[in-house]
Amino acid sequence: MTSTGGFLDDAFWTEFHDFLFSEQRYAQAEELLKTSPLLSFAPGTRVLDLCCGPGVFTVPLARQGHEVTGVDLSPAMLERARARTADAGARVTYVRADARTYRAPEAFDVVLNLFTSFGYFEDPADNARVLRTLHDGLRPGGTLVLDLAGKELLARRVTPPKVVRRGEDLMVQTDTVLDDWARLRSDWVLVRGERVTRASLVWFVYSAVELRRLAEEAGFGRVEIFGGFDGRPYDEHADRLVLRASRAD
Image 1 (tube, one colour):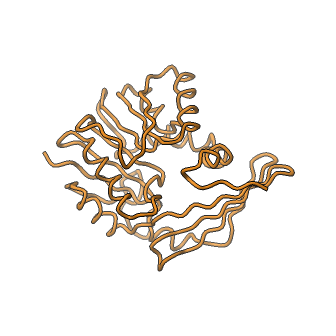
Image 2: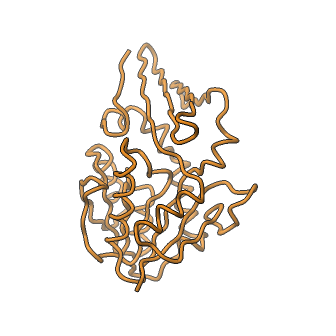
């Protein structure tokens, strides 16, 4: 049996990659970029994909003709992203950097943080720093799109363990609410033949009200909340918590 140390451990991303980033997820990202009014940008837009992972959104954004920079801390994920970019014949600038400290002042028209890539630092102040990184990277009038699983949605989805099979591999995920719904812990067990790998992730979860307040405190204006990439309201029919905001002119 082996264990990984969570999202800062490259072994986690390598071991669990096929479950975190299935081909279906790549296809979903492609479709969202074609259909979502929240992800429709003018040709040639300068886009920052912060916490880009293996390029799920980064690569199709570049194929649409945008000037894209992907930033991630994981060498393994950046290696996969570069390979996928080369296979697509696209051009992306990739940077290995910590989301708290990456700096490119006013370099982008749009900054993205997608698929629940926010809230993983143990100190809440560090999560606030990530929002300031996103804010500072925007030109005046630029747009932030941040997407995560909202606390209201998680409250109805934290259920008995989830079991996912991919080929001969089996993954079991168990979620536990911590600190009166301030955080969530996911315990993962991956079985590959005789090999068993365990991992745990703990992250802060946010309601729409809490996320709006954090964005405003980071300096964003015109904060809007949506219940999905199709722009639906954030209500009982929501399937994601999507925040769109802008940097003041």
